[in-house]
Image (tube, rainbow, N blue to C red; front, side, top):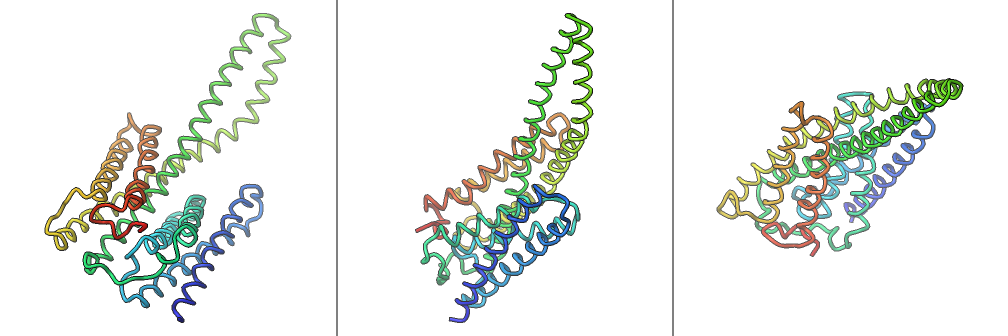
Length: 319
């Protein structure tokens, strides 16, 4: 009874705190001058991390096994993983803006776990024979950490594509303005001088935004590569440990189960991303496009297979 009460309190506390964090993010977007908001944001993410950590520890103690036995617990762990990524990235670089991705990801994941799933799935049950192994903690935790890192990195790549696309549109329209400027020169010197003054005015105002936009694109590219590389490492470890566990539980390292197949597809997509990211001729938009495709593949691997409830991993389904 005590564990259930504590779990209920920590679940709603973490959800409330991360909701406030997102509200602070929206305020920072409109009011950059208030420095205290950023400090409050970091404290909020830290409080969310400790709340989710307490929630997982309480479930671990009450159920007497690592809390990764069903979809609800995996979603809570995934939300906790987003907060971990934020904390690690903040220690790595004090000026990063990764919480713009991690905070909404944490609240949507936890919100679906608490509100989108039935109350029956919230209850911890006895482990099925396939899960009664010391490999549970190693394999499932590595896979969920990889999902969280790859999702964050892929979202950064999506943002990279959006900003780059808008930048190309701006360049296109400016080129049209340049043609109008030349045309005005041909028709009259006075009109040309007026257009030239307006062009210089626009250039003076647009140069600084373009510079900051370029810096933003570089940061997005930098962090997407770093976070995806971390997630790819976790994914590799998770697949290898899962193969060992499969041999122990089912007598074969690889069974081409739907979950295993899509995990392999996910690994292949991000292996292609790593190649395109390190290749200068394919660097930039091409690698970001591959990561964006990987974002959809991850959700099919993690969530789509659970919706179907088929294969050897059906214990993690909605039923």
